[in-house]
Image: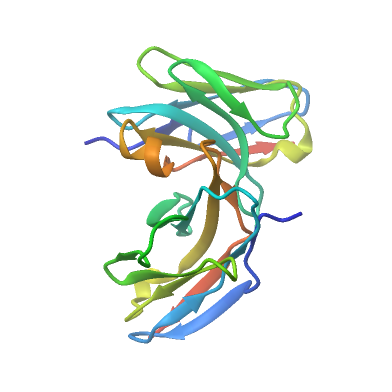
Length: 114
Length: 116
C-alpha cells in the first residue's frame, strides 16, 4: 500500500496567489514526521517544512504552511503569494517511528504563471 | 557551511558494468542516506548509514551496497548494472541533533546515471 499519496500530478497558479498541494498518508505508527520538499529542474531536493505527529500547532516557514489534519491523515502544503521561482516539483514525505528512512509520494508539479 | 555534495554529476555506463557514487555530508551530519529517483517518480530509499554502520535498507538487491567513512562521507556501489538502474541517485545527510528528533534530511544535487 502507498504510504504517501499525492493526487495532483500538476497545477497551475497565478503569480501572487496561494496554492494548496494535497498529501495524504498511511501509517499505524503513533510517532511519525511529515515533510515537504521542493525539487527544481536542477534536481536538488530542498527541505521546506516539517510537522511532527505530536505537534499541536500547524507548522509554518515563511510563505509555507502545513495544514495538518491528523484524523484525516492529511498534510497539505500551502504556498502563499506564489512567485515565479516556486515553479518546481513538490514532494510530500513521511518518516515513521524512530527509523529515519523517508517514504515519498509521486510529487506534484507546480507552474507559476506571470 | 558547505552543503551535501555528490560526484560525479553525470555518468554513462554499459549494462553489466559497476559504478561508484560518492557523497560528502554536510558539516556536523553523521547520518547519510541514499535514494534512487527514476524519471517522473518520487525518490525510493536504498540504504542509510549511521556512524559507519548500516542503519537500514530498502527493497533493493544486494548488488546495491555502500559504506560510510570516519569523516561521514559515503560511497554507493552498484554492481552488474541493469537498464532499470538508470536514475538520479540522491544522497542525503541528517544533522547530529535536530535530525535525531525530526528525521529531516538535507539532499545533495544528485548523480544522474544512464545505463545503456
